[in-house]
Amino acid sequence: MNCMNQNLTTGWAADNINYYNKWNCQSNGQFSNIMRLNILPLNTLRDASGNLVDPDKYHHEKLHKDSLFIDQTQMHASNPTIYFTTGMTKYHTPRYSNMKAVFNGARWEVSRVNENDHKGGLSSIDGSGTNIIYNQYNTVGWGPFANNSTGIPGVSSSSHSTNAHTSNSTYKNNYVLKGSHNVFGLDTIKLQGESDSQYWDSPYLKTCMHMNPTLYNYNSQNKPQSMLAFLFTGEFSSANLPGNKGCKVNGVTLKPGYYRYRYNPTNQWTLVIDQVPVETGLYGVGDEALNYVKNSNATFIRADWDGAIHKIVLNEQYGSTSTTASNTPILTCAGTSGQAVYFSEAHATSDSSGNVQALFFLADDPNEGYRGAAAGLYQEPGTYVAIHDIFVAF
Image 1 (spheres, rainbow, N blue to C red):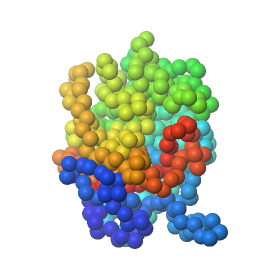
Image 2: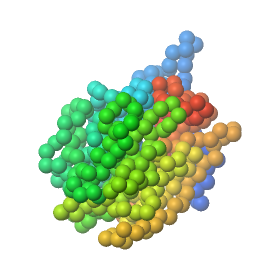
Image 3: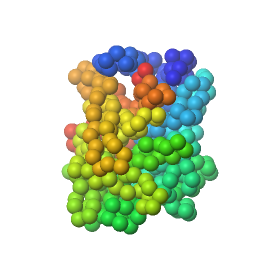
């Protein structure tokens, strides 16, 4: 990726700070730069009257970015296409819309891909090229959904109606992933949730959510044969985060975490039962998304809230139910002035052999002092829920 050729006044954010040094980062020599991208970056500049300076140039101070997705099959001026969601309403009833950023050689052009009229929306985007998988919140199990009926195997034959509206063909149709009705099929497992969910006051949170799905194990036709998803059933109160209850599979309650599905033409998407989840994340919640590294066998990137990005490698034998995972921190940032830096959702660009080249991730500079509470996001007392800008490590 040709990051250093970006115009410093347009490709990078106006602060032009190398956050690798500011945040006291380490990476075993793989990275030496972290820059904030000029993609609706946070604007903290105010005039004498307290009004935001250039409000049309920078995003609103209450705008929350989430669900980052990097598509290196769509390159523009040596940079990948970047997708992310935005929301400005309370965490209990968010309306997330999907945005797209393309670098034109001088600056990032941001456009809206889809918008939602109702609480919930589209999130957790993953895939390859024009074949995309994602969650839709106000649906059973949150999907997962594909944006077409041919690029990803094992999907419904007809489009599913959702609360999203869009004129963009990428998300105009929603094809839910399917699995047989045996005990390990996707269709069955999605209905095995708890009955006491209050999260977002949505009945769909009483089902088994499949959060942050990511596809891998692509065959010679570039069609994925495996999927990871964070399985949990929802509960939300002032004292509990989502994801603190496990789904029931064949009468057994699973620990919340990432589990594997495999596709076969007969049963479609079927759960692989392991003794423990592939990953649970640092806090056991699905916010710490695992995202597949393109061209690798089974390598994933995960950003943690404590300022670290990990490389997760599944050492699995296809057709077997056994798996082990290695976990290697490839970027750690201690923060500055005694304050930790928070990361959220990372994707990697890679070479043809699946080696990580650059890391794109959502993060927050602790010295800027902005919090999720300012945007009306749910926040536990004493915790840090932030708004996020897009950074790149190279």
